[in-house]
Image (cartoon, rainbow, N blue to C red; front, side, top):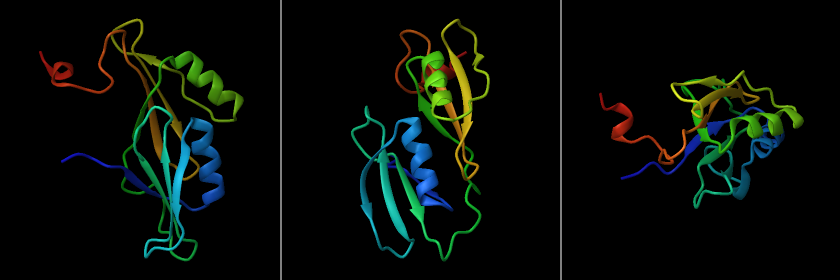
Length: 136
């Protein structure tokens, strides 16, 4: 088993698409009519598969942003990522260092209040968390 993607219910599809495209996501495809509403499939350029599904139903959208803690996006350079986001009008919290000179996290928030953590791993760290991150 593996996680395929996360579905996010959004209140304003155009506003959310603009935000996620600013972050770097690209639309891979859409499904216009489902029982959930219109679905827009997003992925980052380095991803092989869809990682976020935006769910939009203007007739039935309970409070978006409820029930989700946060998404996490890996960035190569926190400084470059937050600078680029700033030019696109996306505010990021001041990056925080975590135990090394090149391990940083920062937070942004999408238009529906969903929190997104940006992570710059230290040099040589795998692309995701492993058991070694929890050892000792």
